[in-house]
Amino acid sequence: MFNWNKKEKPLQGLMGVGGGATGYLVGGGGGGAGIEGGNETEIGSYKFYEFTTGMPGTFTVNGSVSDAVILVAAGGGSGGCQVGGGGGGGGLIFRTGVPLTPGSYGYSIGAGGVAVAMPTSHRNGYPGGDSTLSFPGSHPYGAVTNRAKGGGAGGGHQTPGAQPGGSGGGGGAPPTNGGQGIQTQQVNPGWDQYGGSGGSGRDNSWAGGGGGGAGGTGGSSPGPHNGGYGANGRNFPQIPPAFGENSYFCGGGGGSRNQNQGNNGDGGGGGGGNGAGDEGVNPMDNMHGDDNTGGGGGGRRDSPEGSGRGGTGVIIIRIPA
Image (cartoon, rainbow, N blue to C red; front, side):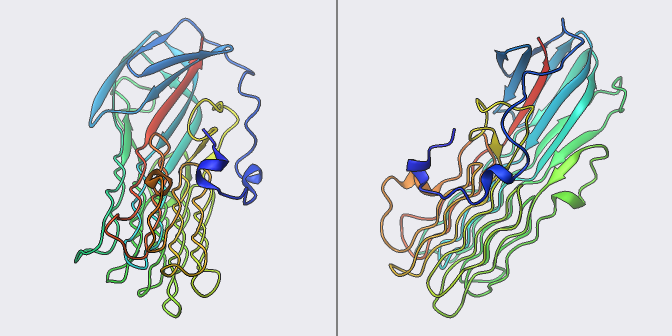
């Protein structure tokens, strides 16, 4: 859920990304079916099934559904820990009008990238894990595995730096380049796919870039000492605000500022964590990507407290009640 006081993030045009959060109680048809597995929530004329654990897992569809809505979000990457860029948000795939036939379906939920801390020889973050949804052979689409790619690692003061991912990690210093968002290059026929690239860091008056998100590209360091903002995630009118971060998913982590100078980059709406300089952060949770959103972790300048870890992914299925 959004808590602007927790992460102190600006709106950054959030309500202009991916539509509003209304209209999710309209439509339907083909009720009477159910799903065994996940956490069930009934809102209006729909049942929502949320899957937050499973590496891997299965669920069973009882009955037939003609028009399910499915969202699959991968785990977010963690931020870098020395002149750290923000971790990239997990890749996001979304589809409406999906038929569900009786049978067993396989899935996995991507883990978030683990945090890294100084002193260490590993200064880059870690990527998030993929989330997958597999249809059985009897499904109209055939036995196919649909994949959302884990978010890219945020860069640090070490090669190889920021990494590509579902959304790319933000650049450190040096190398300063942000990682590429590769979700749109994945083979998931019929699905809408989202993942932006990371912003660039700065090697003069060091600072980290923001991680990419499902809503776009992460912000590059905007000036000396200042970290770039994490890209916003994306929302869909079919998914109510009870899920994700006020129905937004896969925001990028913010880049670090230079020691105690300048400003840290804010995490993007959709679970992205804030960046930080050398000083302690209280609470530390502000730097972590939110679980069940695929948010990227925030970058850290230098500190044994470490960078922000990535948030875990999620799968949400909506069917008529």
